[in-house]
Image (tube, rainbow over all chains, first blue to last red; front, top):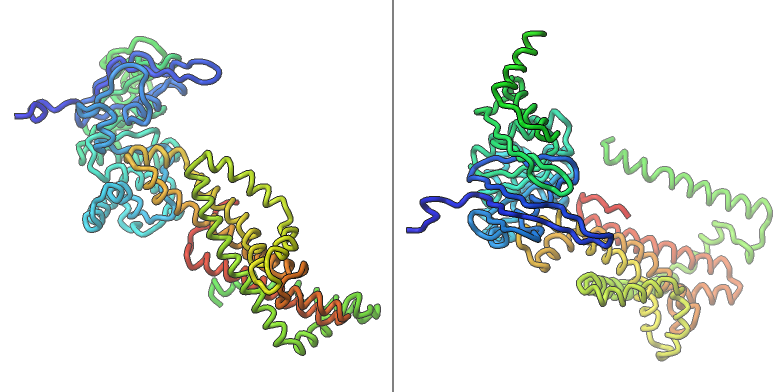
Length: 279
Length: 259
């Protein structure tokens, strides 16, 4: 009997994580005493002002950066082991596609690097192309696609190896508002279908609220998690963005970002209702 | 007319009109001011000389063309190899790059008399060496640039895949360097013909276009000299178009890189 089969380790466990950058002009403490546990299948947004270290924290989970203090476990393993085992998929603000490869070949890239045979690669890529709604574009090249479509390809590529954890660094940051909301709807659906946990870096409050089960609010200099706001919006639909409890959650996160005590959900909802009545 | 044909016509028409106008003006000026042949022959005189000496110019162009081709291939291969080494081993890169920059600053034909002196007067080698050195420089710099460009996103992505340096080279650096290589090759192909023709001015085996130009001038047959120059122009165009076609063939519709 293995222990992990009965109580699976959380997707991410951060304990006392700190990061100090030593530059020529001195020492910058980017992160201090970060404790955060993300359950399997949970969607957590990291939000905070520029320079609060949210992207640094994501890269530490990805083992693209090494912390100077604390421990990082991904699926119960050290971050480095998890990276070598391809436990996570990652997407950045820039899609970072290879322009000379077709959409399909871009999605196959990680599979190809890890020696998956051609037939299986094809099948998996076809599945993912359907998942991200790019059915007709499999043989297109990235420069022929819009920014939103390129991000879909990048997300499909991140999902190629069916990771249990998806790390996303402002993937919709460069998209226009309409596209952005559509991509958010898609991501909620995809995360639900794949059952992957997601760590999502953003500086958009509505985006964090719409997507997440919990929003980790960070403050800058030194970067630390100042609050964790649970968001309970049930199943997300297009109408979610119109609901009072959505606005209530936005208010909670905004207050937390301002460093004020987070108001209770019920109180905020009541005042939102009141405001509506006044209109 | 379909779109591609129309675009081709749009691209070809302006230079064609300009070329015809330029030659017509040349002809008119020479005739109107009665310019002497040894100063500037009229295009019709050059054309006649070209017709008369057609077979000799073609033979000479064949020799120069072969020198240019062999030198170009050797230069390109060496350029690619050294760029690969320079990008892979930074210490060597730091050592090689300034030397190549020095080579680029040196008018390479200045080496021609020295190289001619090293070999027998019947050797084809010195001219080909001059060509190879000239062609090597642009190929080296362009390929090095292509191999060295690795955006932070791609670097982090490959790191997340736990990819080795060899895999990064195969999957990103080499495909990324390919358009740069062809940019370098296009520049090198023109340089190769120039180097092959000009290096004959400084001695060595006299069977190419360069020696036809000097010997015609020596014999005061200026129209014939200009006819050989025309041969060199055609040869240069053949090389350039050849490089361009090879690029199209390999890259297909991939966009050219910003240079």
